[in-house]
Length: 135
Length: 135
Length: 135
Length: 135
Image (cartoon, rainbow over all chains, first blue to last red):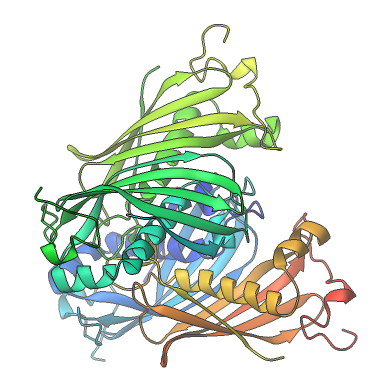
């Protein structure tokens, strides 16, 4: 699976009084990265939720902060799938501002139904998530 | 109807790089004020959503900012109902830090069902919202 | 002064449990609109803060909500200056999703220095903000 | 060092369209936990920033999500210091709603000056952060 990149500008609302981006916003950016990753694979995540009744619940997040992002910076999120089966997906991320590495991160997700119980991704989405065999 | 007051501390996440609270957070604080206003009247807003299938959709907001709130300030939100009938409720707010007036605000709401169409508040809630007659 | 338009996608983080965008986020979007408005006029707001030591403090906001924005919608913010002098600027906004009007809004700002005291916009910025005469 | 607990109610703004709290907000709650941890040790973090010109920059975060938090839940954050020296502090967290474990987390911080370069915590704060010897 190859990585997908998307970019956006840092909002004023995302800064804090240290004069840099508040750290929790990096998780929001990672989510934007994986939504666009899915779209690039032909899957609109909104449709998965609406049509399949499935959601990618967040089970774990990790982020290492390397350099601060600042207001009005153009940030690029590079997203790829580290591992995936029909139950669990692990995304990895690199965040850059130009050549400057801002952060690296990982999020692990489980597919859940509307009742929040674990569910399985239907086979028609296997390609998009790079699921190759029986798992 | 008398006013209700509740207090909380400003979070670091709520500041921006001006070194003060980002202005959109005042709307979040007003929402906290009206939830606690309702609770003080014996109505848990969460139950209204869950049991009645009703929600107070926001139709209009106004806020005048008088003085900046800062990180770790203890802010008090004073909330009261300006007018209410079974379709529309108007809340007013004053935000203080100690004696210092931070902001005044207003939010107007319409009751809606799960389909976002206008709905009517059941009569058992009239007292809590200060609805006295037929409207 | 003519209006400026910019678009973006609604983030999952911006929704709430009603299944639509949480209302305070519209203020964040208006801020994005005015930053891009300024950029289109040749003024990078970040530079004004950094180089001039000036900031556009928010003195008043109003927003009327017409229709809910939803996750993954592409929202367009149309921004223009209603009135401006060297002390005070009033921006107006229309938010759309396709042909659908989501909200209209207004924000009033005063220029302040790093000490939060009122300041005057330097003359070199008059054109960008549509300030024509002596005020 | 013993743990410190603080509680608060989940805000409507913190939910997302899955009907539960958006995952990035847990990082905001952890920050509230460590601010109150410090206060319980006699250190007001705001004063450290203002008087010492120091800040606890976030270098790393981890969070494992066990059960969803919901609107109006009363959440308790239990915070303790795992390790600390005059350069680096590692906080750990447990988040509960009643008996229900919501999440566990860790944040690692480095003390930085106003220039964002690494700094050392003054000796007068060693006790509060459980720093015992020479490091």
